[in-house]
Length: 205
Image (cartoon, rainbow, N blue to C red):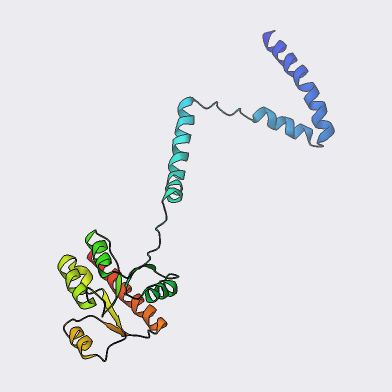
């Protein structure tokens, strides 16, 4: 009797479904047969959900790390301009600032103070004949205090034909540019020097 009651209840519950499916689908008998064969999905436990979350987190972790990694800022060469004529300093800053980080001063002593305080420059453009201290004397002081910066000095002068200037420059190995300066040649010189210096620094790491 219990089995007959169960079948009667099943027939009563499925009767509306049979009518609905028959109206919607011509193959109603086949669909109903499939309903009886479908097993309900097992309910997931807390442990299963935790395992799925762990796998999902593990898969997404690398991409999250890549997105959060800060991008490396591009290198910008630092150039120091030293000339007792203000318009020369201003002009060089104006034409070089689009590509380089340029600092300028008309006082050689101030430039030396910056270097002694720990400031670093990739190229130092320095006039030769200046009141108080000449460019060559400044270069010698830089060599004593910051030896790695001595070779970064590039002299600029408009008096290359003067005997005293030529005599002073003969004692140092640094490059010399004559005024008026060809700006594109100057930019290219800075690029080459910076490129070599950065390559040497990267190889030393």
